[in-house]
Length: 131
Length: 119
Length: 99
Image 1 (cartoon, rainbow over the protein chains, first blue to last red):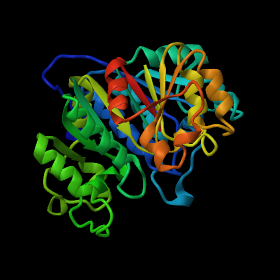
Image 2: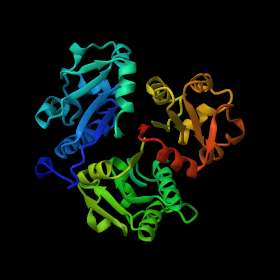
Image 3: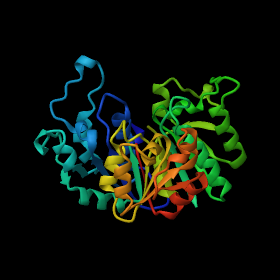
């Protein structure tokens, strides 16, 4: 896939990009298509953070089986993110608590943040894209 | 100042493309630059010249084409999202072109602000 | 930072999530269906008024008017037109749409 090769816009500028995932997978396409943008952004050697809050935390569930709804299981892609140098994965503690989930329920290693930590992280970004 | 705009919803179904259009037009009127607008998710449906809204309604696609022509805006439709939804080169209204997601990332890197309109 | 919210607070949770994560001194602009939250008697009005102590709250006038809500705006909410929307984006170093 040529899209995944290293890209360069020629400027040498590195910005802080945050991808804010607030939506559950499968009910709508945003999680899947959002992931495609994250991978491309990393290929541009930008400083990428992925944040999962609200129903977005459901994207990271272990034990996914999509055969019965006949759609692609893209949850494995989250485990491949490290290979694209996307290592900053953050999950909102409040959102986990509100859904009866803990870190052990998630398919990848994440950093769990408090509301204040999450707010400060967001405020320091150059570009925030929400899916 | 240079603004990039990301449109994530199709026309008519959602207010997002109306809001995005009014924002872009106003930004230009105020002396800012909108070099590129990127269409993603169902936003790719803004680009088809096959749309025929009723005469008493706004024509969202033609409105984009006109704004692009008057102000030299690059209207970019995501290739993967477009192919998934049956949007092809031969269907595009004037001013639109199909390209990759890298065009969106470049907007984030190069412009002063990136504003998203969606659902 | 400028936070942009476009969902009705009586239908979805995006306003609540936004208010939870907006740091003191940042701005919140309500557009599209989110403008209902900035009107008298709405179930979210108390949240907006409480938030207005630490945040600057704006609502998009054309969206209020289109919904018959122009005369019902809460005290403490600043109504802006599209020019004001553009100014808010320009004045803040970054922005986030709570889709």
